[in-house]
View 1 (cartoon, rainbow, N blue to C red):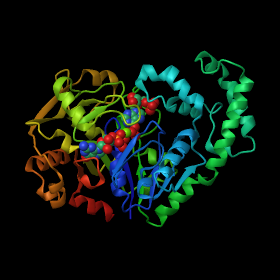
View 2 (cartoon, rainbow, N blue to C red):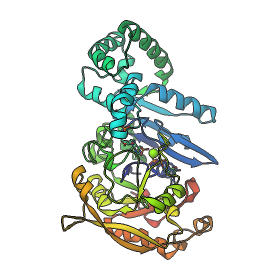
View 3 (tube, protein in one colour):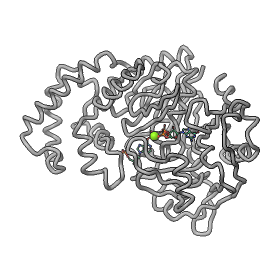
View 4 (cartoon, rainbow, N blue to C red):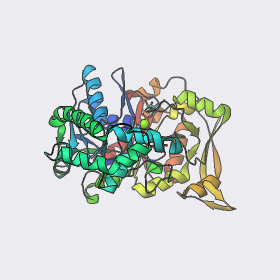
Length: 432
Ligand code: GDP
Ligand code: IMO
Ligand code: MG
């Protein structure tokens, strides 16, 4: 079976959790390769709702998961999620990469004090943790936690960071006392994390060699990628499909396919350009029907029409051959549904989104209007299968497929696992 990357095509929250959970029926391994607890992946299954931040979405089906080297690993969030899942009767079969970046409590405080307001981050410490990773003199890895040199490394790091922590008001008292308290906390994490840590690159590459079904679960989305998104209104990791290779240590040649996840419309939480953004009643209609409030922060999400120049950019950057289109039910009841097919910039039309903030602020979307659909109860249609769906829904999905040149493997019409309609192309993916 194939190695498949599931990647967000928009600004995050595309429903990657639901897609990974659906595909995990066949998967042997689910691998998170980027980001940290800024992610909020929702899985609704077996009458329960799970909001996963650090855990791979495979935990809901009790399948094996990996947190790769590219992840910013927050021990406190992991241990909290572990406890929550166990208290809900879920066993957690997860490996944490020893190469993952260690995210410490002060990263969260620095995020809240510095980046949070300016960029509208999730305040989960992501930017500051990756900043320290890249700086090297102030970064720590999960492996450091298990080294006999940890006390010395932590002290060295705190010496480098002391001024910054004081300036941000994170450290107010005695450095030695702060160090001792942190060391104590780290001791308690070490014991609890010991059974989970290991070599992600060995396990994932072995599974690929054995032709197991390996699913890479992207966090955030293409337009939030630090190199390819709407910088600086992005996250601090590589969310794109290529991040699966660097974030785990697998060859690009090992990836068989990339599934791009998109809502039937667009949302964005936090700051940054949003060419197809809607305001007023229509925005409220979509936000309320779609429950568009952040999974991690509870903030209302900005909403807008589907943006094909952006999706085409995503297809290009990620090598997307397959689409998972979610939340088609949310647009139900609208007479007409608009889709941006191009951007107009100073009188010229562009079919591909230019990923530059200043340009994106100025583009004028060129819309095409398609017939809407009105479905009260999708369960009957789900039972009958994709062929029985209203012509307008099929026309919408086929229009997107044609415009971005990729095949749809599933259409989502509700948050629950069973509210996914597989299409014939799913069989193509599974038989790779
Ligand atoms: P992720 O971060 O990409 O995993 O997405 P989130 O979980 O943050 O946000 C997606 C939201 O949409 C969650 O509340 C899901 O339960 C919900 N959802 C997923 N698929 C569908 C769908 O097809 N229809 C509806 N109405 N909700 C969906
Ligand atoms: P999932 O995996 C949506 C956004 C934040 C902010 C910017 C930077 O659930 O799709 P950060 O905390 O990463 O420094 O914030 O990125 N953001 C997300 N938006 N879904 C996410 O994850 C996000 N992770 C970060 O709102 O605008
Ligand atoms: Mg989310």
